[in-house]
Length: 565
Image 1 (cartoon, rainbow, N blue to C red):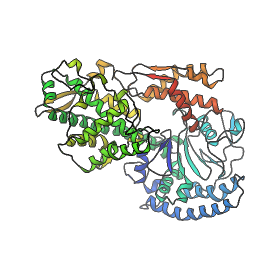
Image 2: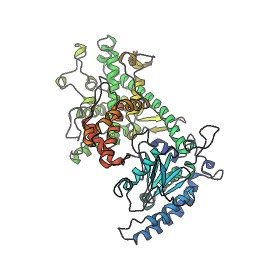
Image 3: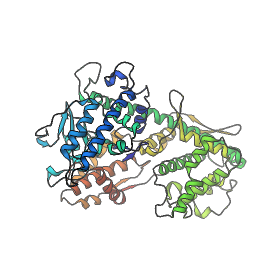
Image 4: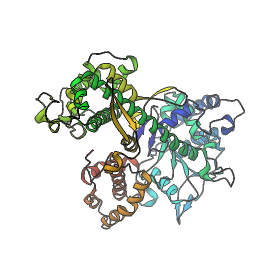
C-alpha cells in the first residue's frame, strides 16, 4: 500500500504513480487526455470548474444520504439506500448515466461473478455502506470479499480491463492485475472527502473516475475502440515513459552529488588528495566509498519519509531528538534554504547518524542495521593514516575525514531535487522510490570512471563498458524477472502447495548470490506471499492486507541475498 500526498487517496500495486496523480491534479499539459474535450466539456471549460459544479450538488446529496442512513439500524447493510441515494447519483454525475442493475452478474471462464452493475466493458460493483470491501461476506466462493471477487473477475475476463468497486465509504478503481502479482487499485475515501470537505481530492476523483477515462478507444491511429485504448491505460503507458526520464534525472543528480562530495573531501583533506595523486589510494576505491555514502543518504531519505527508519520500541524522547536535530529531513530542509559554509558540524552530525545505523544508537532511537552502514569496529579507535598500507584503510574511511557544510548541502540538493522539462524545481518523491529505480540508477553509474583534475576536483567521465562488464553488474528489468519467476519459481510453489498446508510454502528457499538492490528477491517474495495468503483465506485474489501479513513471514524465512557491492 502506498499513501499519497493526499489525505483520502491511496494506491495499491503501484497502479498509477503518485507523480502522475500530482501532474493530473495541477493540469500539467504534458499529460495526455486532460483537455476539456477529452472530458466531453465545452472548449475552454476548465476541469476544476466542471468538478466544482458537481461538488456543490453532491455535497447536498451526501448529507441527505447520511441523514437517511442514520435512521437505519446498525445491523442493516444499507445496500439499497447506498446504491439508490448515493452511489448511482455519484456515478451519474461522473458521466456514467443511470446504471441499470446487472441481473445474474457477469461471467468469465465458465464462472458467474455477482457484479451488481456494468457500463460497457467496465464492471461496477456497488455495495452497502456497512459492507467491508476486504472482508468475506459468507462461506464458499459466493462469500468472497468484494475486492477479491471483482479482482478475480478482471483477471479471468479477456473483455474487461478496468473496474469500479464501492460501498459508499470508499471507491476503488481496479485494473486486471494478472501481470502485477496482487491487487491493483486507486482508492478514494469518499467518507473523508465529503465529511472533511476535501475539495481538492474530489477534483482528483473527478479527473480519474470520470466516464471518459474508461471509454474504449483505438490503440493506434486506426482500428476499433478497445478497453486497452482508454485514457486510464494510456496514462499507465505515459507514466512508464516519464518514469524512465525520472530515472535519468535521478542518475544525473546522483552523479552531480558524487562529484561535489568527492571534490569537497579532496579540498578539505589534502592528504587524501595526495594519496590519490600518488596512487596509494585507488580512485576506484574512492569512487566506491562516495557511491556508498550517496546510497546511505538515499536509504535514509526513503526510510524516513516512509516512517520506518527509527526503532518503534525506542522512547519517544529519543525519536523526537533524532527528528529535531539529526534527521536527513532536517538536512534537506537546510539545503533548500542555505548554501552552507566552511564549518563541518552538519557532516559530523550525519556521521553520528551513519555510525548509529551501523551498530545502533539508543539516544536517537536508531536500530543497528549493519550492512550498508557497516563500520570496522576494530579500526574505529585508530586514527586514519593514509600514509600507511592502503590495504588497511577501513571501508568507512570517509567518515574519518572532515567535509564542509557547503559541499554536503550542495550534494544533498543534487540528490533530493530535480528540474522538469520546463526548468521547474521539484523535490524527489523518496517515499515512493522503489528498488527498481535504485537498481537502474546504480547500474548506469557503473558506466562512469573517476578522475581527479587540478584544483583538486573529482569528476566522473562517461565511457562505454567499464565496471559493468568486468564485475557482471547488470540491473535486471522487471519483465525478465517475471519471466524467470514464471519458469523457475512457480513450479516450486505449486509443488509445495500440493498438500494444501500454507506453512509448506515457507519451506521454499530463494537465494540470489548477486542480489544488487534486491529487485529479484522482492518479486519472488511477493509471489510466495500471494499464494500463501490465498491458501490461508481460500480466495484466489486475497485482499492486500492478507498479502502484506504473509509477506512478513516470507521475507523472514524464505529469501536470502548477498552482494559484494
